[in-house]
Length: 484
Image 1: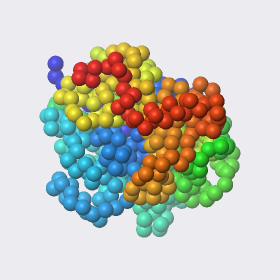
Image 2: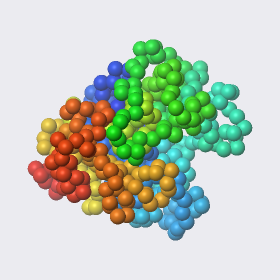
Image 3: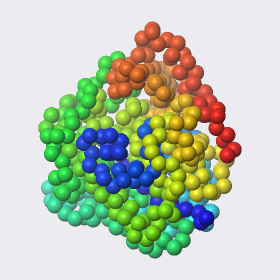
């Protein structure tokens, strides 16, 4: 049998706000139909809940501390491979090739094994310095797009956006335009054209959609799908008590927009508008995914193509008085993961899985040689037996202060087990524990009550601390033969 193609769909800032995940607000018929023909992973976790580290980790199959990518913007000068020489060194920022210059990325490995690899949209982080041309057989397209490209209405165009293309205007916009007037429609159109050109060769086509990333801008027809009065309000909208200062933030990403107050609580009407905008963007993105799935059908490629869809991390929409990402909480670390493999498992899997598992899984799906040194494991056994014994925990992390670039001062290491989320905030160099968090999902799946100082849980904290410090290799399923 010919090795299958891969359609690799990345979605920015997408929490499990999808109909197939049971979200009562979401209108997502196209991703829902993908889920019906594949495996939906209910508990999939990114390794760090912000774009660049999450994507770099997934694309290398290595964890943030291994590739030393924890932030978005720090700059450095160093020798780069010839293939990367087209990027000016003064903008070549936080990149996994600084720590691992010879790393083989996921698409690069497919390329070495005879696949045509190509990308359109946001696959690596969207800044120029985060790109990796060596990963691809052809130049990336629509991979670097500035904030000004998110806006169409005159009131959101300004001299500021011309002077600085990353300038933020309104947090929302609803222009009465066709899909391809905004970026994700252009990405879908471009991907369909690429598919037409490469369909007769084994391909790894990576398509990255930016919505629902802020600003929440989408064609008006997607806003009109929703009655804003019917969209649910955020659960547990107050800042929790008894949490370390490290655990929370002031939603700086959202507050950078010109219609959002710099501090203090948001009004009920503004919260409703923002949540409406997020779901409108989810539906807009979903429609673009539908175009890709239709294109596979039209070219008779559906039964020859592995389709994987993932959100790079989760998101807060007012829960805990938090907006956006950059925490170690469940809402930020958990994200959608749907894998459709021709003639393989269909259904829902509740096992704890991680985004570092995606690299070895796709090699397994396509029959490519297993690679040593990856820090995840193939999920293919779960497609055959979704209820089988699996990992005891999933690991994520986040640095503080977040504005710090380079080696972190403090790192929060967090671990999700079947019942608990346990977090230790440590001095990065010394490993000294500064604070802890413990949430019992059996009684508190919203993670609003920190039990770290509760004497009832002393033994659990001791055991979880040992497990956290032993790391990811210590929690692998003992029943799994990793040589298979």
